[in-house]
Length: 88
Image (cartoon, one colour):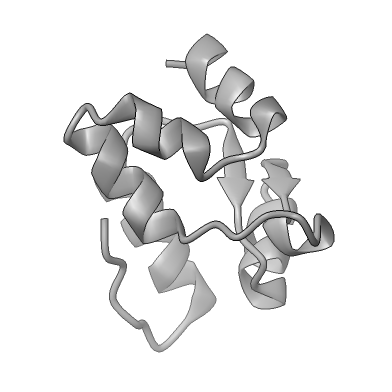
């Protein structure tokens, strides 16, 4: 789901919390996004910390929405896919 730009971190946070389904973990390689959600006690997964991962979150989310689970799974580390499966 695309997330528009906002003038403040609090506006971005509120938009995400209000408009997206409930979640427990934030997947982002963006340091600013990590800071925003880390301050709110969300678990952070940084795909860039694992150099073997070539993940494009928008594509993965689209595949999940389209129920193309095999393609979504191929794009994620095993640990992330297992986490998604156990936290539906």
